[in-house]
Image (cartoon, rainbow, N blue to C red; front, top):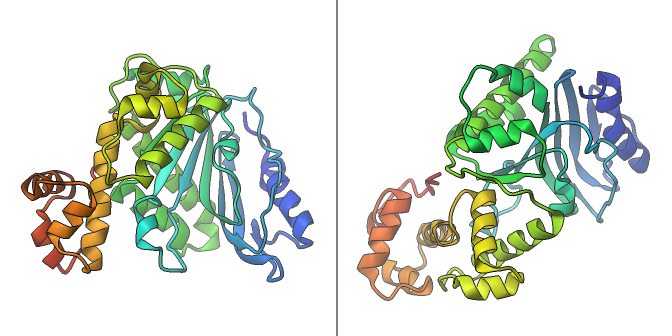
Length: 329
């Protein structure tokens, strides 16, 4: 079981409140102006399920050890990232790298080690006890991925892109105005809807065997991901990435696909096309110039790949009034 309502809702928030010299009111910690801006909100729905919303920007880095981490408990964490509206315009070169996503981890993986705490924190963390979810699936036939996650006996991490149907639920959690009488009930239903939708997406993955992860390997795989996204004009070469990662090509490909749900090349191609869409959206470059900038020699090939990922050809997209990137899961 999770900790009691009083313990959870106050532990991490109390630690932050003490640091900032302020108080928690109505489950909310407002960041004092002299430290920055934003808020943290904590909700405990029952002994199985809780949620922490953090949306703030600090004037200096803050490193606080999370008092909630307990690897002996069978907790599954859903950590939503890049899901809040940006206060400032995001530079073009960063837009495809800040795609809304969610990390799904077992309790033995500390995602704050993987994703360092910065002065800007915009996340929603939903924690649920694995036994609670297992009871919901007792008579169901589960995919290998879903079964391994729910067993919660090995360190696992999955990184999923937030599709529009998920973003809609997140927006309702953050923005929907609900009377206080119904607030906890409403948020619990939405938290469980997110979990259900994410498990549906995760169950579509075709891995038959999952490998236990360690913090070092996770760090390395995320470094490889960064390397790929920083060089979208150059198709990845597995052997070169394996040297960069100090892994065998087989291990690199296996762990990358397990975490991100796509092969290295398919992952690269997806974000390459998303970057193309961002460049076309800006309207400063022609279709040929965008294709050339992203390493395409044959513009017809570029147009075909773009349509596969975005849903329309580049020329139509560049002239469209609704130039939004449609992320294909």
